[in-house]
Length: 489
Image (cartoon, rainbow, N blue to C red; front, side, top):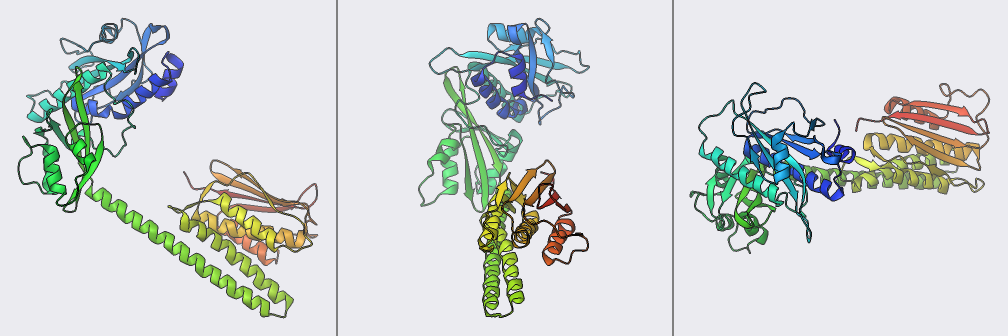
């Protein structure tokens, strides 16, 4: 399905500022759909204004939908939808007199012109919202439904006046409270005129024993949350409905999220809506995850320290050995332990079990160059980027890369040594090549007795389920090609 941005760019004359306003509107118009118990379709004028194209759609979570199929991308000729034409031409909200039965169910249609307020200039009309209400389950509305509908009417008027969405505000987050979570309606003085059952339950959990209706929400909330501590100004602003903001209040182990939507109609503030959501369990889980993340990072840090201690002990032991072969074997072990320690050190600073492997690869390459013999005057080079990899891939890949680089420097004595990375959508392709002495006659990876190559084969093929090939280069030297599957993003 094409995106709103694509449809606007291809089929309308709206500019970048207009598009930003529409994005802000559709990021928060679930609120209008839920309060209206209605489907919303956003229609923008086609180039030349000879028709309309549907660029966005929203279904209500509080009532039955009218449109089971997607409408986005549909084109309507001018005159085909007279309510849209009237709202656009007359710059006002229009409502159908009688329900429309063309879809088999009674539907009440209403259209709302979308206006963008322009600072220091004339306001622009950008589109029209078609609001369609399924009346098949119509019944005598309750107090809650009447409050919802009145609030929806106020919001629709704010859209037509260019006062909603709120100019300059950040897009509303997915985790913000929704209508069904809990709703309070305030008057101009910040007193509660209606409290939904869910909103009242949230305040009961905060410790409220009195009735909310008729109470000044800011004062009540402050009394629940503070004793001798200074009052949070953001809390008072949100709880009184004076600004479009969000905040959280905590009392008695309960955490409640508040979001205020000032209702400004006809140039004056007539009250506010306050959406409420109990986020106690959500915040508890987030704190548990933060604690676990900190514990995991500390474990990685201690593992790195332990590995460095092991490497230091091996290095001391190597210095005491008089047998060159034994000393060389211990030095190789030091390098292998060091490559694992690098991964754990990086993970100890990462918030998740993912690491920027470019940093690890560069350190492994530098380490290989530093410990190479003086006769080998070459600095390995990386071409391309690995990107972010999970630790389950990073650790064996770092060890395999260490072995390949060390093997090339010790046995090939090259003048050039490169690590070429080609990340794909679902595989990581890696080539390590050098221009050294090349492979011995009759070389076969399967039957090779080299410990380093056996380690590489075990890591790449056995642990990473990848493919590994080692072959001579046409220009001279050796080329090692690895292809490693990546987990789905």
